[in-house]
Image 1 (tube, rainbow, N blue to C red):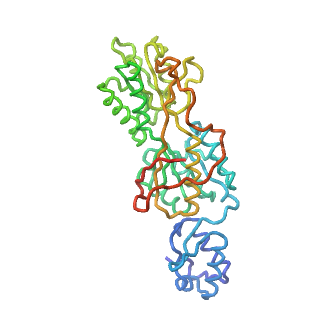
Image 2: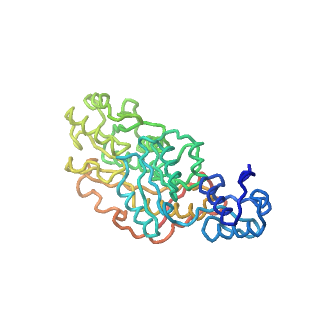
Length: 398
């Protein structure tokens, strides 16, 4: 397909450069790909070779292209001007993690970029990313709540701007992913409960087909097996699915009221703590005397309602922000580089909800405060060229 219609020939190098720039911005010319050769551009635009060369020089000087010796000229993102200074943070309203959002924003601002929230609750992931593209944002960080996103629509966005995923990948779509090691975190939670003498450990949470949910459940099972315990299907007490707005705690309440009820539960997602607390209150189950609890995600989702505090598998949002910042910068400079998956270790923070005595509580975490906003340089990718690929998993080491 020609770059311009034969009926509309351009007259100067600026128009050639602007046409190519718009093709790059729209994704018609894929980021990182080589532009047509000088001869092809001469034929397509109907201009001289000198005009084409001046147009390519302008694209290179403005940041919309890069000259690669012995190969040609490749498409780039362009300078950070106007909306090109903005990075979209795609997530459902009400679920954005403030510690992660503000820490990432601070790092981006130190490099002339700014983070803005783009709500995917109504538009879904595809629509929110298309919004970022249509408003010519520099890049997008996406925490998708869409189980099976439309790969054709999202790949169209990826041709025009880089996208980095948080927590889990976009199914069927190759992007960088920055995630926490929820499998090992869930396993550590269950083994800790077993170390406190709990022998019947159930699981409570939201069930869906996201990879991260399956990893949390798999970690729970592995922890049970390594602790010498047998998981029981009737102790799988899910209160929601991905489409649920309000939790259904009826099965959970019935199970907690039975004589052989679980003496501990692992809560897969911190927002499900509300369901557990309501169910325990209705049937008169006390935490941690009758029911030990470990959850995953927020630092303390009890928010002071239970004086003992929540034992939780916590995520280091400051470290996540460091790596997301690094991946966005890498994508802006090398949009055609192969995608990587970076896994950040989680930490078990012990408080009273698991039944541990106070002298066993975690005094301080190894995490930096989310208020510690200084970025100490790019994340080093320690994998060799042969190890890099779309399924690469490696821990971040500061």
